[in-house]
Length: 345
Image (cartoon, rainbow, N blue to C red; front, side, top):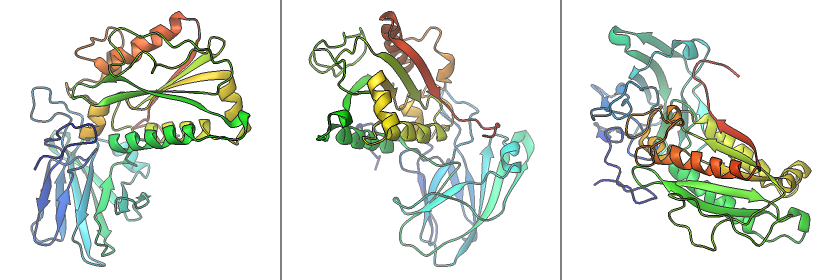
């Protein structure tokens, strides 16, 4: 049965499948999961292959670093060797001590592996890593990933929480938070690209921001944010590259700080600025478990010069919204969050 995600998109992807062995089940069939193949001869070792972004499609790429999967059915204290292949050569990271992360259960805490992780590179630059893992015997699956994951569905749920927290009433006027949540556009597969507007109520007029042609498909005349004519705008976006999940954690930390009702620095920022925040620029890539590309096999970060609204709808929408703000003279900062595979810090 094909899984349907939170936005109603059917997720029939090569990167998201399930394999059943004698007593083990390996699965990547969840949002942001990625494995192309799994094998096990005797249950003591799992041989796993990642799925390149858009593998076996006309838009196939060579981006193949992200993996995210679960193992269930392992007995208490059972040790299994895991060999993950079909990776881009990332020896520098592993030489510097990078290790995959794991958690037990869907609500467990992500941790770095505490066992040795070895790596090698064979023919055709087929990079692979290998490690041993001793299972706890939990009835819940144990998840493994390249780095700390943050899925599309998790971001949607976090936006729900942010919206609810901002809407909560406060007896203190200086703690009030203005928040407007909009769908900026839809991705090629139909997933939402959201835009959060966050400030306080000081300087808020009765005028609404003007519609932008081709954007805000779900907007009604009275649903656009109010205008703050005297405030400068700070625009923040994240996750144009799906595998750069640390960018999403930076986004969460930024927004959590910004909506803190008690921190005087957060209050001052809300009083000074209107924050425009796009949580995910490439939701299809994040949902599919891609490392770098969208569903056309494109690195969307190279499409800003002349984005096509039909081929690059998310980049087109971000750029048009920034241009609209810039035309008012209010745009002060634009920050796009990334992570890096070879630089530390």
